[in-house]
Length: 237
Image (cartoon, rainbow, N blue to C red; front, side, top):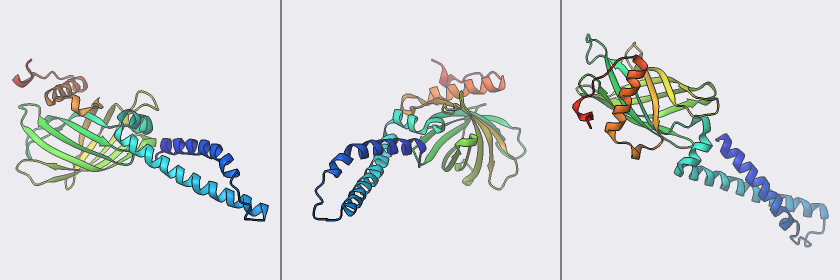
């Protein structure tokens, strides 16, 4: 269970138990002659009520966190990665060819319990399509700032490729959400790890056109590598 959701639920339940105890204490249990047994019954009623309310709060906060982005950011805190990420890596087009820079964007969809993503990659040299990929087996080890995942890529003239990724996230402060990732990916069946760099672009995918997303990816590539890229005509205003 998410620690913040648990904390919210415990606090809300404690307040409700405090408020409702007076009501439960006034319940007429005179049918039970033993005073001690009356008290035990009232404690049992309060426990059942508190347990039910606690679970209701958990379900409610979890549901709202998955639907309302600002609440999701509060609940997930330093593990919040939902949104659009852009970056680059290098890969040869075929065996024996030199490595070429490839830029990509990813749309990360995160709930309180799950993370999945979809992405698209293009060769920087001529903007030819490289791959589309999806990942669902994502694990975020927030304590040591590490993300590992398995994803599947559809590459033209090739069978579907399954790959493994291992990334370390960067934060501005210990408690802030990640803004950058750097790590390596390995195609299953190969022995060469490819270095990847990703930077958070936006929390909201809907507000970003694909052209703007790739333009930002180019900026990230230039900043990280020191190379200068001549923009193709599609990026001309």
